[in-house]
Length: 156
Image 1 (cartoon, rainbow, N blue to C red):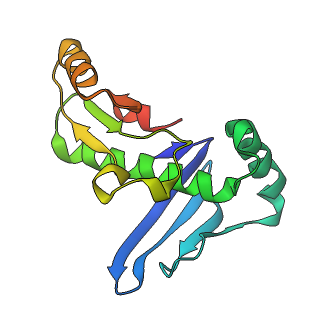
Image 2: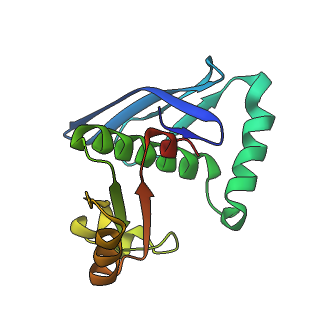
Image 3: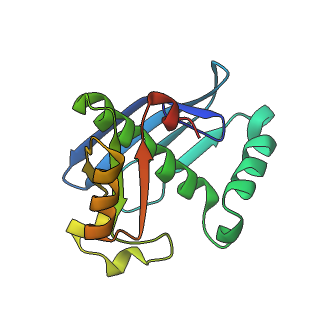
C-alpha cells in the first residue's frame, strides 16, 4: 500500500462529476486509522482531518518532509503526494513488469497555472533494463522522475 512518512493510504476513491473530481481516502499508521481526507471537486482545497492524538506528530512529519514549502498548505501537499504515489502503485501493479518509470515535465516550483493538461500529470514507462531507463530520461529530459522496482518502493 502507498505509504508516505509512515502514513498509509487506504480506501481511496475518486469520481469525476460536472464540478470536477471528487476524492476521499483514509489514513492509517501501524494498522490504526488516524484520519481521513476529502476534496469535493468544486475548486476548493482538500479537507484533512487527523485525530487529535496524532495531529502534532503528523504535522511535525509534514514540516520535516517539506521544509522549503512552509508558505504552502502542507496538508494539501502531503495528500497530493500520497495520492500520486498510490496512483503510480496502481499502474505498477497493472503493468505486470519489473520496472515502472514515472516522469514529470515540471518541477515542484512550477505554478500549476503555467501547465497544459498534457503536462499536468505524470507519464509512465515500463523499461525493462537500466539502459532503457537512461534512454527515456535522456530523450524526454523530465524535470523530475521516480523509478519503482518493487512494491516496497511505494513506501516512503
